[in-house]
Image (cartoon, rainbow, N blue to C red; front, side, top):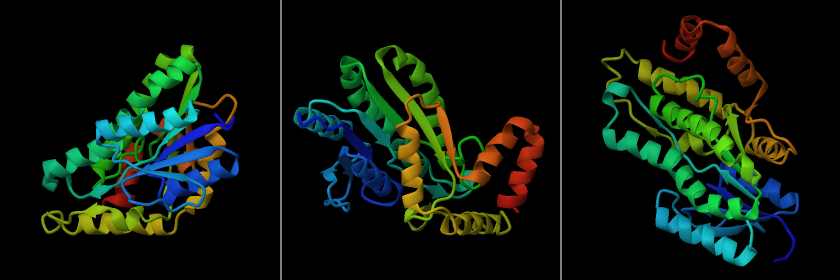
Length: 266
């Protein structure tokens, strides 16, 4: 063991994940990134090809890191993607894939790292959710549901593992300008029946993402929150999104979702 702290970032070959991996590297961590790509993209970060939906691959990859580094100090569960479309017309295979990657991929990682962190009596698990969790977005329902599942899971987990010195933090980014937008699996099926509202809603979402925060700034924020001495259970990235989440606590649900509908479901 070289004395450095050890970090794993899933979905670490592009976008927020790559920026987060680089920010950890700059703070002196040995960083391993897991992704389905054949090669890594961040110089100095150790790439491991791993599909987080494959539990056996995840177990082998995590064991490989632990066997080499002899400890795992922080895991940032960032791997994910988005789908969009009307609930009525979304294929069941698509909604299951959304949950499998975004939620159960995180579950697979945590199953693998928790025994290690519990035995070493330290560690941090950072789960990347989204502002779309507390504020569900129409025509992006399954993405919102997958991120809301992460939020609920994380809040339960933090109290389960607190006695072992393991900290759990959920981070909720707003709109970030990354390849996530172009990679979204979009379905406009039913757009005629919904009077064009599906395509208009997705266009609004994509505009917000394309004019959003840079991944580098988001990655710095994630690492800043992740490494706090006594982190809060949750952090929201982006001032206007903090306001939206704050308003959720104040406004009646009817009022809030009338506002959401005017923005995303016209």
